[in-house]
Image (cartoon, rainbow, N blue to C red; front, side, top):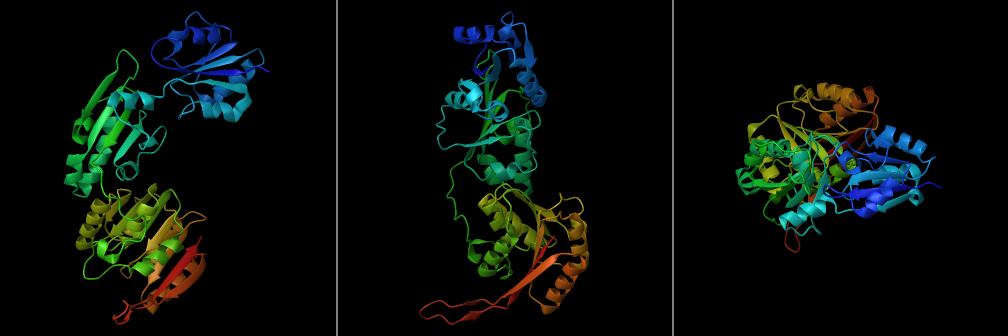
Length: 402
């Protein structure tokens, strides 16, 4: 059975062993950048992109003999190795790894990387970059032409400025390793503003560093740990039940309508860092509370939307989950807008303090075709041994599944 020789490449030359493998293959898969390495070694060259077409061509070439595939670094680290193994099976692919770009970059930076957070931005949307990056002390990014170092730095800077986070802006340092292993190799370092003002070669790796911070508990913030005004915050017990009802996905979009202090958004952001959260709040005092909570917990997958629903929802990406904590007497209009944007399988959760709000919510969700359930929470707290019971107003949690 003919095989695939998957060869990792570092630098600007093939080793004698690699040249021997390439010379005796029926075909060689190679990128435009690596073509000079195989000049005169093999008459049949196949382009590595587009990948789907390349895989079909490799299948045809295997009927004539072994096929070599040249790829940068370690082909099993965010490389072509996964696609080849998925298509042709592990037993047909022999892997000859080279040093990965991550290993080279960390060597250049003098940076131990056994505890480093690695994120690939290849082919990924950049809309939640601040949320994915700023919650970590050190992140190494595999960039692409859409998410280049200058664009990433600009995105981080904009998110931090929107929350008045001057302390973090001053503390963050960026390092970029460009054209690793080539004659044009270059190492660049600077602040967010420095990097945002430059341009970079397509081949690069980006390191984002900020001073180590004490990481708070993963879940279960107390009301006293969340900035809020005049006691207006979703109580701990209700917040926990609300998050359970929301059944947050790992990614996607959450709308938090009438965010208040942003306590639901904050807990959701920490539970699901890849979730994009849009917190809609019209009151300036609460907006400042939300910004402060984002800064405190580096919860930059939260985006504050200053405005009132339903108008403020118009330009937001479609949600997978919606939480309604406040409606400003516009509940029916909010439900109509939300139902039109929520896909099948989506969920709405509303917390109702007043019986009239619960009645309106139930009738709206039923009219709009949702499957509806409700539960009422009555919370009583007692501090032992000498505390008196503290009784809170019951809250009705209403859930609508589309």
